[in-house]
Structure formats: structure tokens, C-alpha cells
Amino acid sequence: MKDQNPNYIKRMLLSYLPILFVTVSILIFIFFSIFNQVNVRNAIKANHLTAAFIVNVVDNTLKGMADDAQKMADTNGQLRYFLEGPSDRALEFDISNLLSNLMDLRYGLIDSIYLYRAKDG
Image (cartoon, helix red, strand yellow):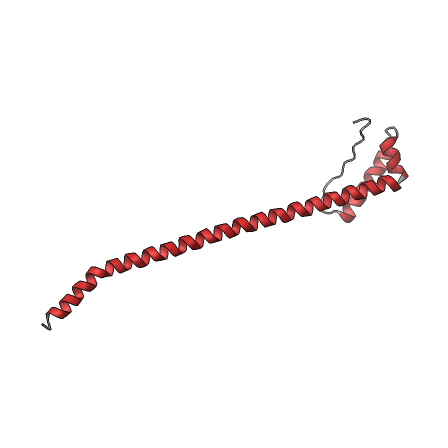
């Protein structure tokens, strides 16, 4: 009987050991799959939040620039004359410098400003 017990235990270990390894391997694979899916979802959420933040910053910058340009049009005689009067190269140069200074000092995110005169397109 003593000889049969160790053989029986060895046979049982050899027969169930592969099942144990396969089960543990499957559990580890499932864990890493779930972990990867959670990371992908978090990365997508982070990308959406970052994109929304950037859109918000650009939108607020453009709104502020439009407000400042409107204030300048209301208070600055040169800009009002540019928008309502005939085309003049010297005045266009002065207005361009005025807007460039505004852009450089307050709005580093924006590279260029354009004014549109509806009367001459």
C-alpha cells in the first residue's frame, strides 16, 4: 500500500497539473485583456477631454479677439475709416500693424487676423 500511494499521488499531480497551468494561464490572459480594455477606454476619454479643452481655449481666444476688434472699431477712428472709407495702402499698413500688435501682445495662440470689408469684398 505504501508503494501505491506515492504513485497515485504522482499520477494525480501529473494529470491535474496541466489543467491547473491552463486555468491559471487563461485567468492571467483574461486579466490582461480587461486591463488593456480599461486602459484603452481611459486613453479615449483623456483624448476627448483634451480635445474639448483645446476647442474651448481656441473658441474663447477667437471670441475675445472678435470683441477686442469690435471695441477697436468703435473707438479707433483709423479702423472705422478703414472699414467705411475708400481703400488706402498707408491706412491698410497702419491697421495691419495695429492688429499685429494686438495679436502679439494678447493672443499668442493666433497667427493671423483678417478684417473683411463687406462693401468691396
